[in-house]
Length: 213
Image 1: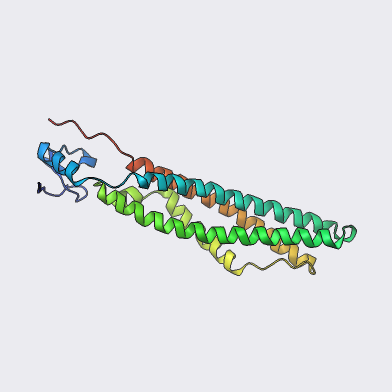
Image 2: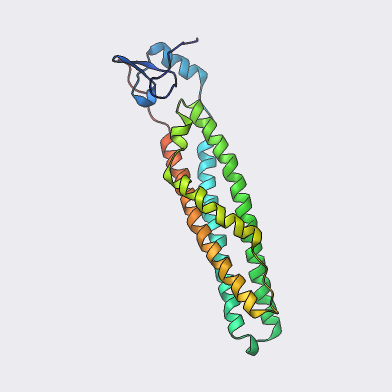
């Protein structure tokens, strides 16, 4: 069955009579029995999107933990620099090796997480459209705007950051301090992203159909 409806006066989605106006279900319009039957027959997106959204939020927590481990490793390297003259060479080398590995893992995790976010964002936009929402309204929030602004300097730093050199202690300390600031900033931006995905999920989570008049 095909039901033809005029667009909602607020967002352009299929509208239903609501007093003197035509409104979509999101803005208070109430579909008639034929429209409800068509909606049920057409089906909706797979609930898998909710699982993927929860998984993406969980990966955000993992990413924040990687950054926290990186901060710990860098601070440990700074402590070694302070006592470098009294420590065995092997301990110094091992400490810097761990710090370098933690930094590489944190940077790789950042790029992987950004790629997953792009894929999630495209998926969730399609889900919003399929559910009858205005995707621009659903995906708009101040958290994503702040995240985009904060993302620029963190990406620049991840590309231009130097590497630890255990032969130049002053340079190594400077690199460590910059990397600690980068990881701390990335923990905050990741928290914004997790908050954003949760907000979008709450906007799209299933709601009961309105009762028919």
